[in-house]
Length: 410
Image 1 (cartoon, rainbow, N blue to C red):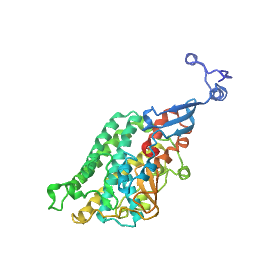
Image 2: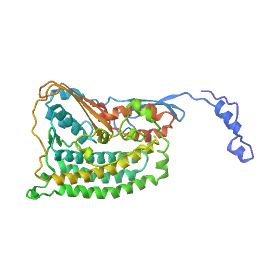
Image 3: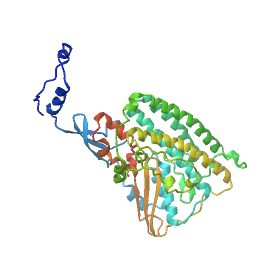
Image 4: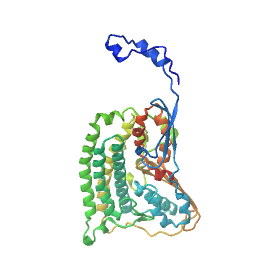
């Protein structure tokens, strides 16, 4: 560092006594003043913003971040290797644990991959039940993200309110399959139980208290979400830390492979549920929110709107299930062995585009099962998201990626 200055800015006392400070003096002081060496700083895994066990190294020039290096691998469990020694049904509980916040979508993706390899078409009611399960999963995942963002930005009330609303959806998970997080509900060829089997005292009636309570939960949540939005959007400090921060362009998203809400916040109008529909998403009506601001606030607003769309999807799926009635099948019996071949499947996870690539050899267990995690790709964008921001903005920008490191490491 050099302490030499060509221009000395007057002190506060001198200015109060009448000393003049011109624009030329300030500009010359900036260009010829003290120069500082760049410094690499480690943020995490001890920092709460990391939302998991990983390390983010940033290169700081004063308060400005000039480079970033995300480091993952602390949680690596060898998931893809372990499943090679298990039969196809026994992999379902393991798929739950790919991401504790999005367990339903990962088991759905795995079962859907196996069904595609078998060449079977599951019953109509099963497709709508899976839609309901996926959207409940999306809601509780987004609410957990919003609660974490509240603490990241110093709004503890947002954490409490989001956690409270998330409990309603977790209760729906418990009603549906008996578990809160690791649900173990989808099955190859269907789902574990029908929504009508949840109420044992109504076996002779074409009625489900679960479906009734699910619609009530949607009605309640649509009102409660507006209260949470007002809590955040009316906080000028909260908003000022998001608007204009973490800018990443549409072209950079395409080059880096970023998907999901993070991409839709940069103007990428793509959602697998609409553009490459699976199950019966093409038979329900919903909108895909897209914003072009490309900043952290846009990514926040995308997830908020997605929650409104999820309740809209659930209501339609419930009506379809009711129309099919109790007698409609919800599961098929499938063979234990999957024919030899290669199968690729993808699904719209709450965090982006999740993929599975299955190589089967005709036995009752996979030869290879490769998982593509959206967060592994999204976290790699740290360098581009953080360049030019201030150190204090790092937690805010990275929180909007909605990280889940268990899914990333596998």
